[in-house]
Length: 557
Image (cartoon, rainbow, N blue to C red; front, top):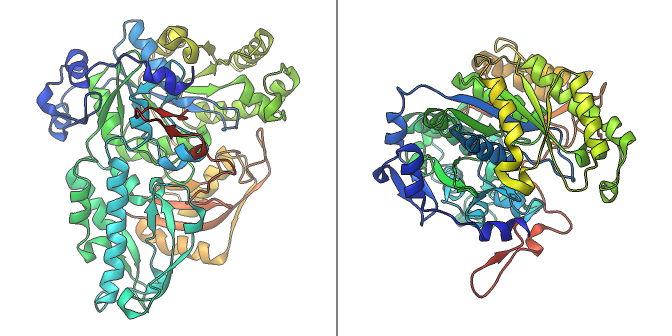
């Protein structure tokens, strides 16, 4: 059966009952969205503050390939397995974006028998969080143009507006647009553009805010542009926009509770992309999970060079979160792809390509253990075409590096297929105190932070940019110099060339643009040709997604 067929046959339990049975959450603390989804009140979240934290486990992966890796699937399978072996575990995941759901991925709620449900709802509109984020963002966009139209008391330079519009869909035609066409009744003529919702600073702010007051304060700090002449920053609070934006996000800030196919509670909240944003679920969700369970398993987007780097250098740095272990997900198919095998030949045994592609896993592993000081367990997300010889080769190469490598069959067997992985993870996290180190010191300049990420993690020999970008970073250093850097880079490679497989070294990383995310508290550095508004592929997933006369959705994977 396909993922959606498996999900549609799931025997879900009312979320209100599950929350009370598993975590003693009384019904009055939940806002149900139907029978199987609910939001958790912030008042209840606050009431947990005196409880001890559980152990935090990060799931990340090798560099993504068309062959698939399976971070969400592994996170869900590991959580189910830990509960099966008698441990109290909860999963914290990101919400899927409609852009990739209708673009390439076709869904992002796990796979096989390791999924979160209701799968269709989670992949589509869910509880409306992304809609609220998009509307809050675009309200600010409208208020900027309205302010200028009615006299421009803040002296905003229309040429220096930094705040685009957003939509949660892959639409390349909207990357560069012109607004105000049609004469004075329609405002003024200027260039503008759209980003995807998951690249919005409002999304990043929601994911890093600790409560409603922090949310509103961060929204007020957003820099929307600069003044004419002296180029002083203009803040959202000067437009009196932050209060209404926070009002639009009054429910979106609450964590969402759903369940796995095995009826274990999972928290799904927030969803910034890891290649163009910071790639982690909300701080509120993670901290809530740590209070509710003895083990909280979370994921970070794309490969460990992106999601895991931002998890440590942005999320952990800002919040004081300290993980106990990292699970690095890999597949035999993906490593063969990194070794040069074409996508249509990945199901054929090829030890030479597997050996060659192993360098990608090796570098991610070294980054995790050396730069972040984390114990790392490699999880081979098993595919049915994997041969014993290939699996043995991969395990022996990991063991030669002193790393445990566990074959996990959660896709086929659910939690039962991941019990060995669960036991190994428990052995590791129970034998050490949580800790976290970073790839750069906060006192380095913004440029030095970019260089540290590119040279230490990506294997680059140099970082380049033009004089305009360097001046911008220098100008920001006085006020924003302690900010972490959020690198916007292709997820497909350690380099900025998406076709460079394996573990390229000696390449140059070019920073084409930098953006200040003052509300979120970081600087975005766009590396190479990275777009913050993706486009659809030649054959988008939207062509296969459908609904029948009975309301049954098909084609979501």
